[in-house]
Image 1 (tube, rainbow, N blue to C red):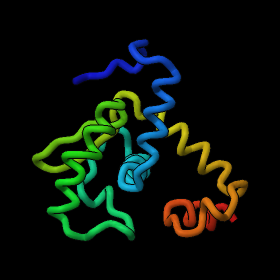
Image 2 (cartoon, rainbow, N blue to C red):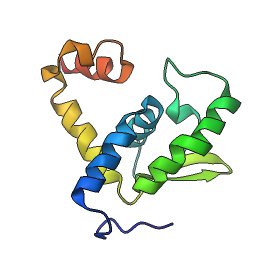
Image 3 (cartoon, rainbow, N blue to C red):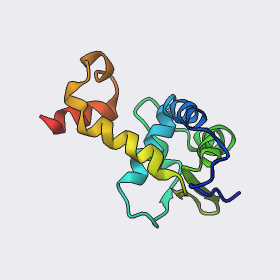
Length: 131
């Protein structure tokens, strides 16, 4: 389903609720971060883009979780598009919504309490890079 980023089907409150739901999963955050590091049109391979140190390295199990749980949420929000053959992901029409949030986190990471940094590889790296 193609999503028009300018459509007003959902209220801003609904969009914020969806953004917070997306951010609740480390696999989904990793996919977003992975997409931020490549040109807009580029596709990146899955499940590699979603892997975290805490992830199971069982590719079949991870791929199944992505297909049935994480990717549909990201697609419904308009943040990504994905294909099954080859198994890959790219930015969706509303990617700017989530990218803006991640940019704000990146720009202010040094102001975050350590309790929100320690133990989260993504934020630990940003925190140390910022210093």
